[in-house]
Image (cartoon, rainbow, N blue to C red; front, side, top):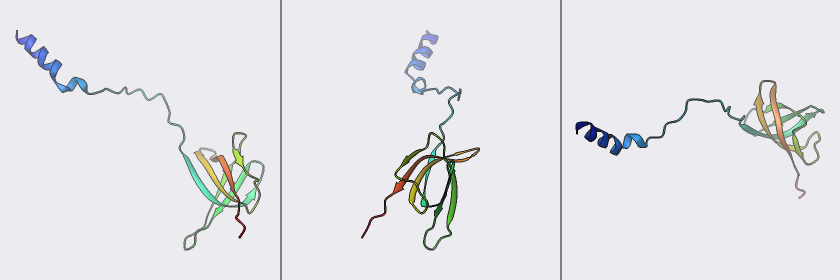
Length: 106
């Protein structure tokens, strides 16, 4: 009788409702993408260098690797304003998507 009572109490306790997660972490997280905007200062077939300058702050220059998987929207050229979505990798920052910003005429 005592074991039936204990079994009933265990079944009614909220402890069995707690989900248990597996500790197997075989799925690696995909690289988080980041964004960088500025003006193209150097452009080659496999690299792009972008200068970000903000009034009152130090300027920042970054170089991104361009691969076959890099999507480019617009005509990429030196002095063009761009936004680069990139992923940090061991080889360097790899450009995933480059958007060329069109300057508005006044």
